[in-house]
Amino acid sequence: MRNTHPILDHIDHHRDDLIGLADRVWGMPETLYAEYRSCAEHAQMLRDKGFALTENVAGIPTAVMGEAGTGGPIIAILGEYDALPGLSQQAGIAEPHPIEAGGNGHGCGHNLLGSAALLAACALKDWLAETGTPGRVRYYGCPAEEGGAAKTFMVRDGAFADVDAAITWHPDCMTRVDDPESLANTRMDFTFHGRAAHAAASPHLGRSALDAAELMSVGVNYLREHVPQDARIHYAYLDAGGPAPNVVQAKARVRYSIRALHLAEMLSIVERVKNVARGAALMTDTTVEMQVFSAVSNNLVNEVMDRTMDRVLQEIGGVPFDTADHDFARAIQATLSPADIASPYRGVAQIPRLDQALFDGLIPLRPGGEKMIGSTDVSDVTWAVPTTEVLVATHAIGTPAHSWQIVAQGKSPAAHKGMTHAAKAMARCAQMLFADPALLAEAQAEHAARLAVTPYICPLPADLAPPLQPRPTPV
Ligand SMILES: [Zn+2]
Image 1 (cartoon, rainbow, N blue to C red):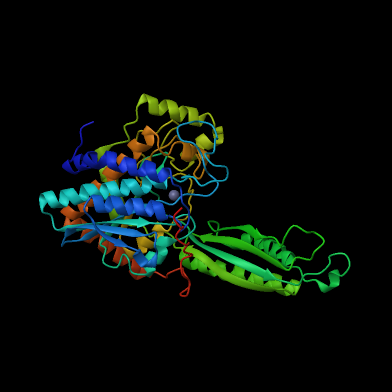
Image 2 (cartoon, rainbow, N blue to C red; image 1 turned 60 degrees about the horizontal axis):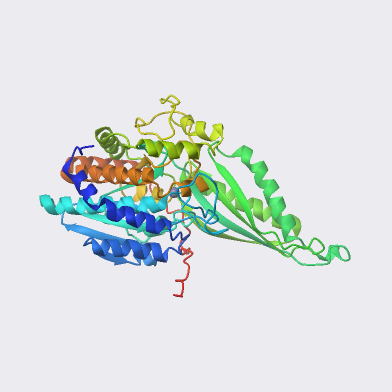
């Protein structure tokens, strides 16, 4: 297919190098602030492609930034490269088969996410130099999107303070501009401390931390009726006090995720959950420690940025999958339930159900349908600068996020086509902003107007540092 704009030829020029990067990162899945090798691969690629490198962005050793160009506005392209635990899986097969039992895997496609963002940055670097356009492109390699809120810490540290606009993407099963909403989310640990005792001989001397954690769950379950409909509260036991039923459990720890459509609402629900925890401690004569682990904001939409990205999608069309791509996707779909396959259509009311396993079309901007929203640390960047995020088809329709099926498709030819397409969309969108100062100014005016109504409040406690992981010792 012929490209519709010269900048897209630059994508084709660098494509194979960046597909190589995506495949290498797929093969070294690292999680939550331990992305040392993946970050080093991105840093090396930035050096090889001639970017000026900044390592240790915001004091995070697995965050990296590369810049190219001179003068003019600064446009950030955001990438990620963190994986998920427990999703080890071989590539290119349509059956569950871990490479390493219990190992990590790229179950959210971030191997593609980071590489495509860097590919877009390479094309923009070339285009800026070739045309003499004043402007700088920055690639931000952002770790720990999965639960670590690295971008929120980076925003707090001022990493985007001089940026004019930001663009990112995410692998998906349908190609479109992302929804305008996401949920603010606080992850918080509650640790109850009681007193151990023999559970049969002297239970009157024990004070059960596990009882406290369970009563907290009961209290939170009653709270659910009295929070806004979009709010979500879920929890996981990190420590239930040990395996012995004949011991009164002296310690228990539970992690909560508390989400809402608006930051202020979320912060209010967090306070109410904390009161439930205090109540549970009071009832059981235990004590409770409360510690925020990470937090992200809801998304601040920018209609100018989203409409610009949508114009780009209309221009470049859908991802050009071939028959072999469709065949593999069909095999993956055979492992999914009918409900899985129907699920993406619930969020796009304007699209009829298609008899194809890969989506090669485009979903219109704001397609209606049921809201199915999660949380992302991209949202904190949306409060710092006008931002747009495009979703691009890289896997079979209905593939659940965070599944072995995503990992299995993570370095397929379809995934490579999707990531290349995403890079084209981001590069062309940034190029339109560089070339049209009035368009960029319009996006920034919208951003300022929204902030004037609702100022940004960083959702992180002031004293909270990112939960960094030590650099692994070489073997
Ligand atoms: Zn993701």
